[in-house]
Image 1 (cartoon, one colour):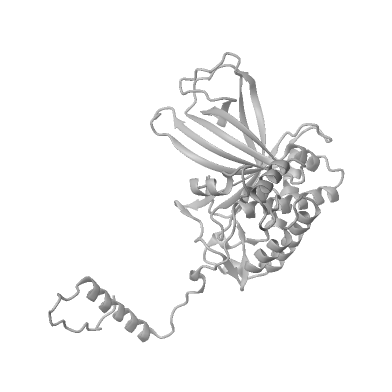
Image 2 (cartoon, one colour):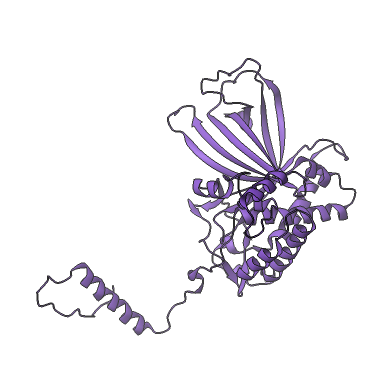
Length: 397
């Protein structure tokens, strides 16, 4: 809400990432917890099933990360400490849909006069589908600046710009604090078992590799835990998942037959140089071409947040449940902060939330009849100079 926005604006005047932003995330989490709907509410009375489970975002993310750690440790037969992460936690934004429509109308939702920012849609009888990606305009507005100017991307990674700060200093600070990496990858997908082959370069549809020494890898992902939210007050919804990536063949020297779609991914990854935020942000432009319809290219823009490998290892190797819980809390607050910058929420409550039937039916009929008369007059206005007859209010629309 507006008070929360003012509170945050007043707190983020520090140039460097550190205790100030960590404190801000903790205070923001507490403030949102106080304004969120408690579990004992009558939220289940809402007619839309996708709004039946209001949640407190940072707290729910913390519980998910603890569950993900437990699932990862049960999945891996060896015991910690681990030196290489064998799974990944990745979050993305998109639109949750049911019957080709978003699961809820857009705009902030209130339950018992408390603003609720997110609703858990994970374990409902109706399973929504996630349409990944964002619009090109949002992609450009939120991420295209990269390291060249202040943007939601730099704010998400804790680069705090003071008012009236010269642009030259802003750019220098962004380049000092953030790291940008670029990646171009061609993926051939559609093999049995949801396998895919990825090459670290652009490979044309004919499968001819640009150089003889280019080597790809055949791999697949196994999803272990997943959670989905709808965030009605934001443009996009949210999914976070734990998955294990398995490499079937790490030395693929030609494109195997059997693929159905080619994807060329142009990705930029951003993270903090000092590692004070555990997440990196990946922004990717994906051009997809079906094998049997090469003229039907589509372009998708994705924004993802991935827990960095070193932080994943810290979570897996935590010596105690208390330490794991503390790490999960910090990572959860950071992820919700990143998400709130990249996918900001609106403050204006949807007018539909307050519409109620009018108690006076006769007054409603008269109002409808008046509107009907005005509509007929506008659709069939009298000719100039004619003796127009009065519009009779005799019936509703």
